[in-house]
Image (cartoon, rainbow, N blue to C red; front, side):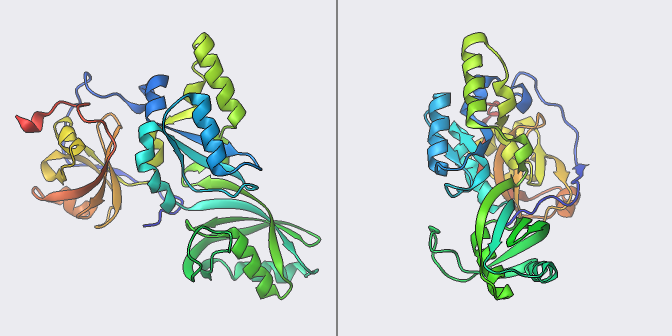
Length: 327
């Protein structure tokens, strides 16, 4: 599964009508800071120098929580978007390993090259490419297919080329620069790199370690709510997925690992195909579980019976909604 940057707006189709009980659950944006610290996401702007693990550990110490994790490791000298999952949100952090990324890179050519040739050569790397991970990578060095969604040259100054690239997860920009240099027959290497997007997380919405430290300090000392702007609900990790909305009575069974049956379905996003990883939501917009779709949108809307999705990972805490299914 690879989630590209969204190219269209999904629509919700109504299968059935129902109301949600206001005494159970809570809309994600109404969660308190203590609740967000237990199941939230921070879009961290990683600085150059420390490792991704180090900045994640510093965030953990700042927020005084017991469990934390990051999605998509950045090399020490690489800056930019590094999503951080807090406490129970770490259990679905793996979803970020499949989302597309965007980088802004300074590539240094080893010889002077005409601009036209640079542009023509870079354009040849848009689409499916073959890479071998660099020696520094913590993965097996074997050929792999990856997709470059776009590669825009922003500026060429002397032997330095500034470009922006959107790519499939697992693409190595360092290797991309080396391969472009080979194609040009000049040689090239990655000089500087910044990640500007990871799925729906962008650098415009990211926060520095100092931002987090200040907001936490003000919350502890004068009850400032600025920390709520920094910690997003766990559902922010799932916005790129197609969704099925279910009735309250189906939620606790799903929280116990049950698969989603047709009677529980209220709303369905367009574009779901069999085998897709989807998110199951409550009527309040809460993420209940991740699941594998067992039928496409059209069948879900038209059929009255059957298992709609195979639950793969529970998000919501058991008991958030009543256990109606047991009675």
